[in-house]
Length: 375
Image 1 (cartoon, helix red, strand yellow):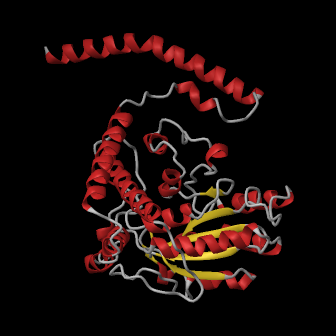
Image 2 (cartoon, rainbow, N blue to C red; image 1 turned 90 degrees about the vertical axis):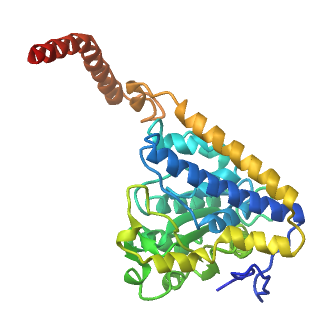
Image 3 (cartoon, helix red, strand yellow; image 1 turned 180 degrees about the vertical axis):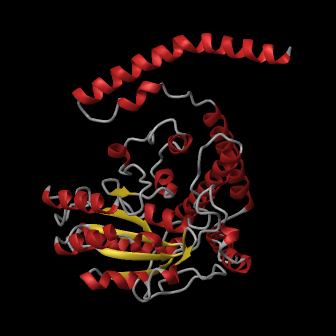
């Protein structure tokens, strides 16, 4: 397993991978990790308060996402799962656009073309074939292997360990291999597909399964942000240069529930969670930066203030989100007006108008009936 920082934050050497960053870049990684976790903490609290319908957390997986996101170039594209919030934060999306999705206000408010991060998919593995298709399109547009660092493009296809049990994953790997697509499959193996442990999904390490179709696999410590950055940089550079796909298994752990609708205490042992807590990706990087003299109290204090202000904005922003109009569900079904959708919209609006007209009368009748029962 590729590792550059051990669980105690001590720098390790690896014969195949290395990354050297300036102090500001290292502190930037810590900031990304801290803000990503704060987003997760606040979103979970907002869901418990009834402000979000659901939340898919990523606590413990921050290094896998931030390290990968920092390896991207501006022209690269990401096809995320429903918990890959780190990519959007690093790409400077407004996090309220993520929370609006989980509030049910919209389908995600960010611009996938501008940010290079495509919409979340809730269906497991559904994003993988579109990711490979997009990579093949990039290839046919002549944006691979030109030697121009501002043009050559790669795609990251995100998945969890549970998605490796889906047929779409096998199909996507096959297409990517056969067509030599410039795509990197980033599998965050967080050990649990809801309540199913990874040992019940595969008899071999997940990165080895890609070898069956000719895609090289790499196992990286997913709680080591430097190792993830180094491995993704190499895989993305290979893809951009025309070297084809790579499957990266980031070995990590989901510290929280699968979603806020889940109770992980019903299927996993507390001792297991405690053991992984000692491998916390934020503590690991913080310890390393302290030991190297890169991190001081002043930066920590400033980051804490920024995180608090970030959280305040999230809470206020969610509570201030207006409810969408009932007709808005028809607005983005097709890029151009569609006769059937228009007809359905007109029928819905007519029914809604009748409902609004009848509502005061029905409310009056209900009040009258209640008063009668009281007498």
